Picture 1 (cartoon, rainbow, N blue to C red):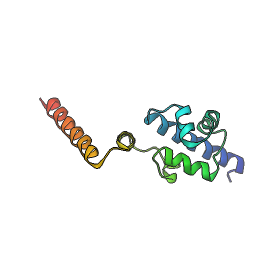
Picture 2 (cartoon, rainbow, N blue to C red):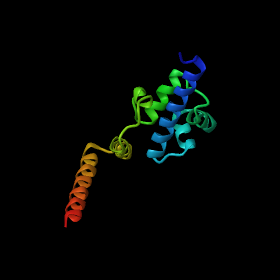
Picture 3 (cartoon, helix red, strand yellow):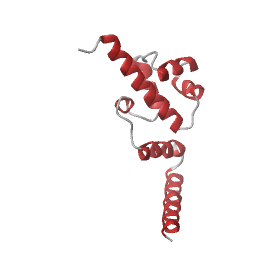
Picture 4 (cartoon, rainbow, N blue to C red):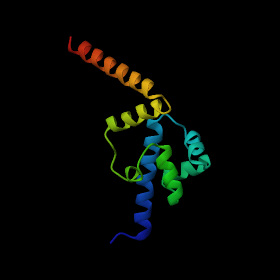
Length: 120
């Protein structure tokens, strides 16, 4: 049987690692994430170290800020491609539909060019 404190600690560490990984993938500092969530930087640090679990409302704000579903913050690590897709989505946030399509077209063209280059 797992002790209550041990289970809570394990959950806090898993959540903290996921928050830190997602934040770094987005290229944000702890301060930048804290600002988006509405908490102080030390609070983000405590979450990431697994020293403290966020309240449910704070967890929801974290998920929104990190462009994630709450369940994703507790899941096993996502493949790198999922993190890259989130990063691209964040970069495109706020762009018009036309501009988003332009970015996707340019990304596709760049990928096609690099694939052809690596084959030769």
